[in-house]
Length: 466
Image (cartoon, rainbow, N blue to C red; front, side, top):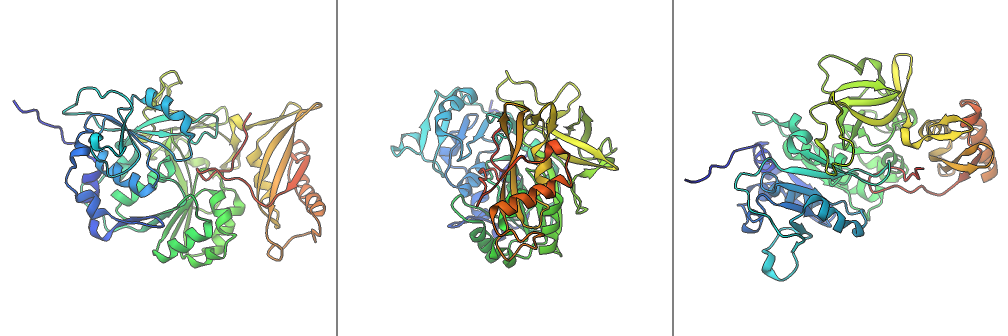
């Protein structure tokens, strides 16, 4: 008797159902991928060979990763997305932990015996599953709170909210600074594939200006990135070449200064900042132009996600929460009530919650807590400041002091309250600015003017956590 395979929503079917694939594309700096070609291609024997297996995708190019996901979802038992910035020395440990059968570095794949190393068999494959369960998608956290963890999702937890019985109207051309091998970028890829729409991808070696110029040439309308991405982008001349209908920020605290700058630059755009994480999924979006989020969102009936504040930390419960960590030794992601503790600390001021920073990033100054992101939000309000990074420095008296690295706006573009003829004058002016707005223990004891700040491939400021 022939075994019947169970039909489940898979990415290929959703792409084909989402309108005219021939009019849609995914593009990087060198390749424009026609979605009708990818989604409509017959199942390759080399892909069918992966049915029921665990596949590690370690592809150099994002467009190849997108094509591989379309073909592998619903075929592979588990898909591990390897971020290009993760140290290669960790791969053997990941292969063991995820029980990887095949590691693939080039797409489309060839047969394992082709002799050119397209397939690298890392572990002895188990028996083929005729009817494997829904594919697991394994993503790495950004490592902001320590070593990156492997988080397990399914297509439903990642994009179930996009599924529809009726194909939607043709969507926008998305453009993202994010890498699609991370949660934020993957969300935009799925929106483009299922939404439907097209997608312009960034490349690691591109400057923000180069990327914006390419996005403008492609007619991109919807732009997404972290606040750090946008601060760097707005410093370029090419920022004036785009005319976005939609701008979204996520991944870091969106302070009032960056929201106001985006409104000044793109007055006709819908500007949104969102809260999401690899473990919790998307919790909410805020579109009122104000930093933080309305307190009414907490315990709001009928919301897409349930929010609660416990010990000043934001917790989220929704269908978009991850299933769990691949390493079962780590505490379960949802608690007994289904909530995910995000580790993000919020403070209630009036009828609005504001993000103070990460629980694990708190600086202890003589027994008093300081959240670096809170101090950065104040420094960034200074008219001569483009962006800042606040951290701790050991002190024999207080245990730690607050210090700040600051990037100033180019000369002639900053309506500074101080002439700032020297770095020392600027440091003094910024410190006075902070004293007028922060408690004494939060004012940076040392300020360094720097030409740039390091941005991780995730788009977040590189922070040294204790």
